[in-house]
Image (cartoon, rainbow, N blue to C red; front, side):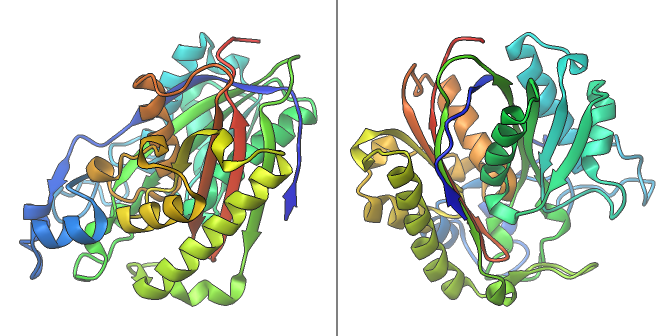
Length: 334
């Protein structure tokens, strides 16, 4: 599904949250036969943050409260509070919480419910599970909600992938980390910020990357790599075409932080130089739905985003899902 959408939306706040526990490649190498050099060469990852797993002491309560440490909801709420503070807003000013995650804290209810309670939001709340493409699905969803009449949306990407990682799988256990990134999306009377978008899924490829209830992730890495590069490039080009922009008009490319090889391959095929690519893969690992907002927030804080810049967001994930969006940055509050 693809479309051109011009609506009055802007990002007015941003925030991030990471678990305190940082795990190095040397620590990963204590689990199975690998090394820092091997991991860095294949992924670009040096460290990752984890809330659970073999490097974190388990909680005394096997079923901790939803607001307890080490949950997707806790990370999401921390990032969202920071975003609201930047925007100068309270939870009561928000119409909707949209939480993009593939690692909800429980089957029922949606984790966004507890996040809304933590923030003091009495409007709506919902989860979006589109795996690593989730946040870009979310930016399109939030813009659509505002086009339908909402004023302010808190959009969050948050994951605790350490709970779904198969820590005995040498082929991919080193890839994943936990974290959250959030933005406040507000209505504005000025021209639209979401200039073009593209969402898609090929459900016949579900078996390339999946995790059953109670089991760790299984992934066919080489095939995921091939499909991911092809789908992300095609989606990004579709969004640019619908935004009536060329790749030279892109000031910053914010890709899903899957691994450095995929990110480099996509950027090269699109013709984007490395200085235009936002990357936090080295210190966060693959954080699924949280990876694009974490990279975006990092770029904003580093002064890499200016008024009028065109940002290209693109990601892919299990499903296999893919999504891209072209966003024009507006630094002024509505």
